[in-house]
Amino acid sequence: MAVRFVILGAGPAGNQAASYAARHGAKVTLVERDVVGGAAHLWDCIPSKAMIATGGAMAYVERSEGMGLASLDAALDPDALKGRITAIEDRLRTSTEDLLSDQGVRVIRGTGRLTGPHGVAVETTDGTEELEADAILVATGSRPRIPDWCEPDGDRILTTRQAYPPPVLPEHLVVIGSGVTGVEFVHMFAAFGSKVTLVVSRQQVLPNKDPEVAAALEEEFLRRGVRLFIGARAVGIDRTDEGVAVRCDDGRVARGSHALLAIGLVPNSEGLGLQDAGVDVDERGYVPVNHHCQSNVPHIYAAGDLSGKLPLSSVAAMQGRKIAEHVMGMQAREHRHLDYDKAPQAVFTEPEIAEVGVAETEAFATGRKIRVTKVPFSSNPKALINNDARGFVKIVSDPATGIVLGGSIVGGHAAELISVLALAVNCNLRVVDVVDSLLVHPSLAESLSEAAE
Image (cartoon, rainbow, N blue to C red; front, side, top):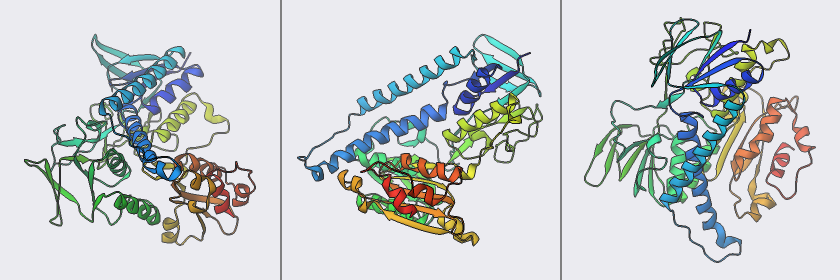
């Protein structure tokens, strides 16, 4: 008898789990109340990166004079941008739905909740449907965190999901939050021509990143006229005749036409019946999981943002695949657990930032012996050809064995280049393996082998 696998949430984790399990013979039912493909994926990740790509194109045009071209100008067409985002979302959603259908996955549009360890009730427009499951995956994602001192109105005070794109292009945007999402918004709106002020609660942007990486981004922001409120924590937002005033705990006030909240996420764990099924939920609303993504109830899994691990679409998708393998009993063969410490991450600013594995500051803080080598893109022929020699490649390795432990990249196409270092970190390759690899010339990737020497 086929395994009955019920999945709540059709984001990257749910989709990957459904597709992989169905291909291996499971009877899969996928429940989604919003958008197949995932709200966070299609309403956050994809629109933001589409907007960033447009901003990057505008920045490239600005650099065109240094490439032997006459001065060019690129003006933003907000309606065309919105149409482009919608077209990309529709295409991705349709392709996902078609794939699931071809693989025999049953998709139910509605809101699901657990009624017990093996029961799921789905509220649809036609009523309630009761499902029985041998295994259940809860992957319901997250939503923007809204503090009690702020009430977004979708007009002047925006959450991230109200800004892809916003109703109008802000004349002066105050971004609250200097994590990955916050700095990406700074980049895109500065590129679009808006004045931008960034409220930074810590002593650097990207507080969990390498200080040298953060400093490179801060330098670029200042060059582009971005105003930084370093060490200021927002405590209130007031509507004014001109727009908004963001009050900070040190007395400073950031004024602008619009304010954007980018201060984290809250897991969608309410109303799922997790307690009815005996599933533990922590004080923040996350479901604690083991290395198989199992909750304390072994046949009930959690993945994606709900699991409290890295809130990345790539991580969620890999969790989904690993869960499907476990549900189908495939862990009996050689099975590699997902190592969150080796997951590559990227920040799609201008320039791009990417990292993987052990960070230099982390190693020094713990007293770990490392070897750090760094090469600037200013010595790379392809970077000079592209008229963009900003940034560097930094590689962290074990001085005794030469094994690549991690790395950081700041510069053009960093999100693509980090894949080489991610492979090295995950496969325990040595720096000599990177050096001995033949790479295309001229290419930005050549700086990887130079940094490895």
